[in-house]
Amino acid sequence: YLNTHPDIQDLVLQTPDWGIGKGDADSLRATWFGHASVFVEMPSVPSASDSQSAAKIFFDPIFSLRAGPTQYTGPKRMFPAPCQAKDLPGCDVVCISHNHYDHLDFASILAIQDRFPAVRYFVPLGVKVWFTEAGIPGDQVTELDWWQSAIHPVTTETTKSEATTSIVTAQLRITCVPAQHNTGRGANDYSKTLWCGWVIEQKVSKPPTESPTDEWASTCRGAVYFAGDTGYRRYSHSTEVCPIFKEIGNRFGPLDLSFIPIWRGGTLSFLSWAGLRLTHETVPSAFHASPADAVSIHLDIQSKVSLGIHFGTFVGATQETLEAMVELRHACDEVGVPNLRDEVGVLEGSSETPQTDAERNEKGRMGTINLGETWVGPIVERPWEEQAWIDGGTTSRHAAIRSISAIVAAEKMAKSAAKRFRTW
Image 1 (cartoon, rainbow, N blue to C red):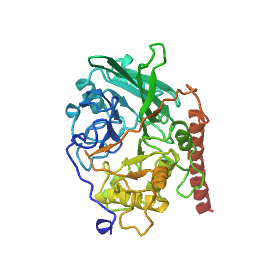
Image 2 (image 1 turned 45 degrees about the vertical axis):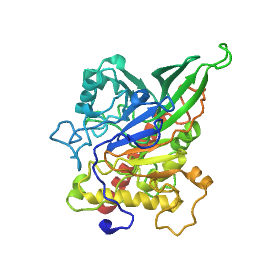
Image 3 (image 1 turned 180 degrees about the vertical axis):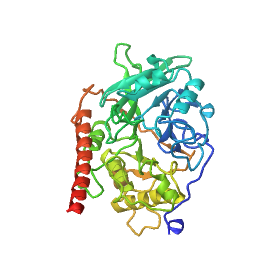
Image 4 (image 1 turned 90 degrees about the vertical axis):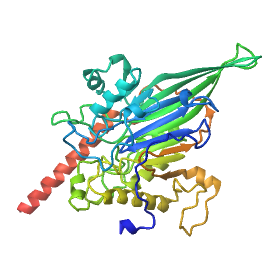
């Protein structure tokens, strides 16, 4: 059924072209490496002649064949990585969402560090020690709590003409934001380090043109959200959903580009390898978003464009990949979110009335791209807003840990009650 479904397209492995020749020179670019690995290029100077002025950001990089403590253990990739660290056009920043093996890979981090010795790492609380023990200099690793931000300088461009000299500076504001997940790399460290998502905004500043005493003019050129790995609700049919995504949208939206997980992790991939099928009703959904949940997150965070990630890589069979893609397409159709590849915002094969520009702008677009493919899209400049907060928010990590603990306790109580009932 999945192989003949009208909404399905095979997932294809491509060699990255980094979007060269696509879009304008100052377009936002995102290359998907499989699972949650995404490479983003965010140009700081409009109409830049090359990619040197673009900030290059890598989220949760993993090039390895397996996601596990060694290269011989853990879930295996369905497709190899589109390329290796040595093939990247650059790397300024690496952001890690949490310490699970499929998001924090030892060999991949060392490969990036070897290729780009000056790269900076941004990690959630408790993860910095992993990097220093791996040999990464401590001053290259910034550890943040939820809602904390750090500033990373990108570039200073100087353009000279016969009459004037123009200077443009750019910096990234990198904010650690909440997610609904957990952490752990062994039997004794369950949720002892923090998990998170990331919002990266680029501030571009220019000197005053009329009076040297005037303030510099600053604009936001690109706002990107990376969800990492997250759930959305307590269980599959729960009407109670996690409030953090609307808070992220209210604080940072509208977001130019977002990366949202649409499938579970690779731990259960052996079941699809054996020919078995898991439904969202049979898999706990507190820690992983379903495709329908991912569309809700897309709307909550006020994203203009969202790419589905965390699927099609550490899976046991092709059917898992096809399921995720078909379910995402159907979930988008259900709420009227245009597909990513439908440029005019009309759903292919749909009898619905074509959407107006206002409706498209309100709901954005969402879909998937191929492994190694680069999505290219515009950056809409907007006034820069200094955040009045540095730390804290209506959602604290302690509240999230209590919430997750309550979910786990409830599941244990339900199992215990069921066991007693069978005994009676």
